[in-house]
Image 1 (cartoon, protein in one colour):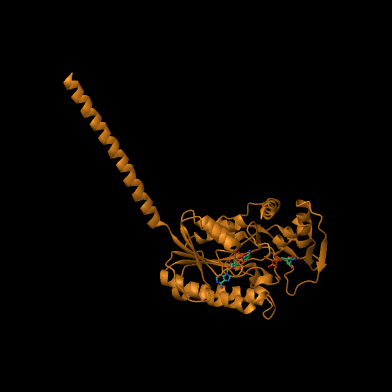
Image 2: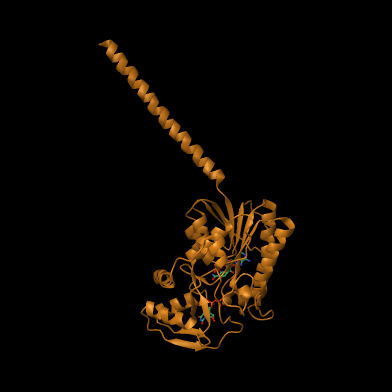
Amino acid sequence: MIKKKIIKYWLLIFFFNWYIFILLYIFIHETITDYLKDIMKKKILVAGGAGFIGFHLCKKLIRNNIVFCVDNLSTGNINNVKELQNNNNFYFIKKNIQKKFNITCDEIYNLACPASPNKYQKNPIDTIKTNVFGSINLLDIAKKNKAKIFQASTSEIYGDPLVHPQNEKYRGNVNITGVRACYDEGKRIAESLFFDYNRSANIKIKVARIFNTYGPYMNTDDGRVVSNFIVSALQNKPLLINGDGSQTRSFCYVDDTIKGIIKLMNSGKNILGPINIGSTNEKTILFLAKKIIQMTNSKSKIFFNDFKADDPIKRKPDVKLANKILKWKEKTSLEDGIKKTIEYFKKI
Ligand code: NAD
Ligand code: UDP
């Protein structure tokens, strides 16, 4: 009887020890993997991360990486930052990229620059400084850290294009002295700087030429056509078209643009760009106005203003290169994208 009890007792101790041992093992294993995961996370600097595209990019990147968002909040939104700050992988640093700074990082995305014509024309010299000094400063950080760096270039480098659709070989038709030149020429010199740093200092660069992108989290006062029309339509206010509305744009939903940007950043080391990222679904501005009125059931009327100086008449990307090299294609239809954007503006 006593013998049986002793055996039972020993068996209990034996299994209890194993239980403790297994728990201890799980605890140590989890702690070490968490620690390893943490130190293996890429450190990514996103300049312009508080803006429209930057917000969506940071939101995606913070899932698996540590993100340092550097932004002077000139057109960015502090509420975007607050939303992202709920995540421990996100750090916000208020800074103007025109001034020198350093952050230890593995990758850099440069999205810092006002993108709405109203905003970049408000202080054109500042827009040029951001593109020239800002790009140099970020490229110097890339050099110091041996980091890969992405540049958010634009369809605007093609100016008012004489080739349609625009492919990456087309060198553009920009009015050098016009009101859009601060942005167009600023972005062109930024591209030149990226390629010069690549040639002279072997910096790993990735350059995307992004075409009109829209979606939730555009500012209500951004000034670009999709947000302007949706905001006005939801308030039954007039939709103001610059010119007769026959000018065209090809609108890409932000989730698709972000996928293209990240695919390019993660592409093979010989792929530098420039690569067009955008929708090929070309529409007139008049079509867009009517579509938004219809989709919002709005009582808004359409009014016509003067045509704006140097406003490109046609715009549509040739995305064969992105299709082939990045296996990238837009997925969201204009209808679905506009619907999601309307829902967002209804809520705020
Ligand atoms: P946005 O204006 O919403 O975002 C730009 C961000 O950069 C803002 O948060 C702003 O505060 C910040 N910024 C501006 N100047 C800065 C400076 N000197 N220092 C630090 N931060 C600064 O514009 P977006 O639509 O999100 O565009 C992002 C980038 O993508 C821009 O570089 C733009 O040129 C490029 N791009 C956008 C589109 C588009 O359709 N949205 C098309 C082509 C290219
Ligand atoms: N546009 C318009 N009404 C607006 C805003 C823009 O007619 O309230 C026109 C603008 O003149 C241009 C097109 O819509 O022809 C796209 O303008 P946006 O500012 O969105 O971007 P862009 O492609 O010109 O940089």
